[in-house]
Length: 579
Image 1: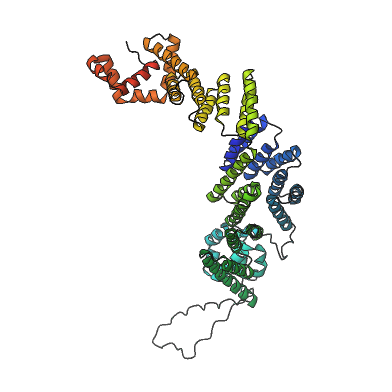
Image 2: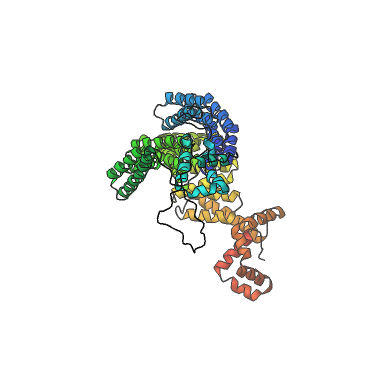
């Protein structure tokens, strides 16, 4: 039951239903309170919802239960990181790497924690790499505020102002470079909701108006014309800033050349162009993710992962769009999944995809996560596959069955199926146990799986027919036994099953059912979709009417085998009676 709840939790987590995942994992923990994996999974679910305190509590329990399991420290580091306990996060990731030094998820988490710790210890405002106004310039809200305010709306039509604000948004510490520009100061006032003092002629330099043209004279007879105000001359740009702009423009050209080469599958040339773009401008992480895509296509997975890690680290330093960070993580996860086909370890890829989904819930990333989880499950089944142990477990189940220890027998048969999920005998035997325990739906499911695996195996039909007989579905049981006889015409169990079904149906036809039996059959029959279809069929409703009111028409209906077969089903279900 704990495994079933865990499976439901995993499915909910993969679908992004984190609250449902938490509920299922909690149910599983109540059933198996010492299972460290359940606390780990619930910790990941809490972290996905941003409930890092709960995630930390579960991560600590995971480590307590299984101190030599590296993933527990990955959960612990992620929870500390979410709570901004950066030093604790670094410590947790390092402990995990002491256990598994090649774990990519721990390496990535450690890098994130160290980067965050470094940023938290950055120098105060005025230093080279930080700004207390970082949040002021983040997100699309900045542009919305500047557009809404009349005093800054006009600035948005000036390309140099827009470029300055974009530069500040990418790296808030660059605000120091533009504080002399009164437009930037005005914008800062709007963003901070602080009224800035309007500059006077003493506060700022105003370019002189150009002298009038010497030959330009106003005709005496003309009306005075109001001169247009002289437009300010373009702001002077320093050589350093001009060079920086040129480098960024050249970087974009290199990227476009790389894209063209990539489309032609000229990967070496694409690498050269993307590398040049990175040299020219290290503030656009798309150059790194594009080069990573080329490495991925070339099968150079280690190089791909390195570029993705750089992109994530640099992107967070620059407060890049979360979608770009998610793209880098997804690309890294894809490389790890490719490597897992050789290493047989899909866990790093799965954790990386999950981390990407916390940045941005992209359908493609979710699909890749599901594929990695499926591959991991198939691999685990392959590694667990052992027909010899499966036969031993099945024999143990048979011994328990003979001793009427049915729950123990079910456990042995279940283990047998884990070792060899293609053995119809184990499904058949477990179906018999479920029938003895009164778990009819489970028994029916196992019997049907047995028939699916081997349609010629008579036991599958006897198990299925027995379940249906106990459920008082005599028509269905009869059909099952008859189908089994096609493969084993002389099977005594199948023949006996047919005899017992016919007896029950004849009993209904003769009207020999007790009031309790009749009531029970009718209630069961009315729940059967086939019976419901017969009763709602206009043709059959007319047939039933003819049997009551029109003997001549009823006589004709008896010649139609399809009609009579449906009538017999209604009789067996206790719905109608033929006298």
